[in-house]
Length: 150
Image 1 (cartoon, helix red, strand yellow):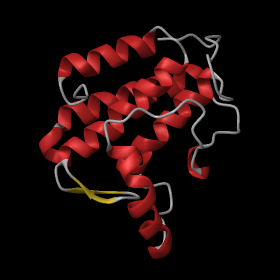
Image 2 (cartoon, one colour):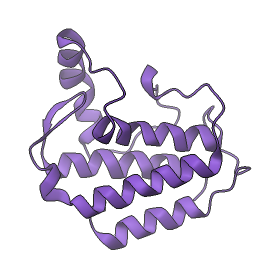
Image 3 (cartoon, rainbow, N blue to C red):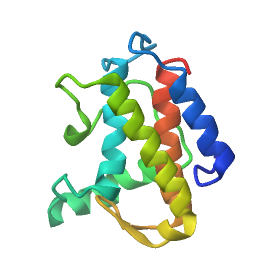
Image 4 (cartoon, rainbow, N blue to C red):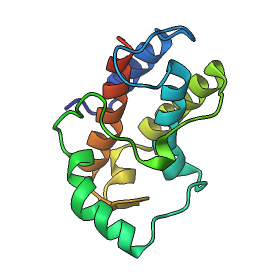
């Protein structure tokens, strides 16, 4: 799996994002392009913005034991994979704002680097190593950018 912490990989992802337009159609799934950008931003909001409630002990146990391995592994997500409720975007969003936010989060993540994330606790899965953080970040973005053909 590509390493999102490497500048050239971050640049590649940003280039793919910059190929999106407000009218880029999805190849599968229900989200439109702006909902997808906002959806991808949720991952970074959970890391940087502390605006999403943390799961309780029971839910965190379930997430760590049943979901974590699917999220942090190198195995690609299947098309039309179920989405956690906090990642579902129903309201209208501004394309340029969501795109700019995602790019800003990517720059911040790359600049902090993998050592910053190695052993850092995630919002939902407990402590992750740098490879797990990379897989979670890169795989999610790659999945959704592919969903929109970029």
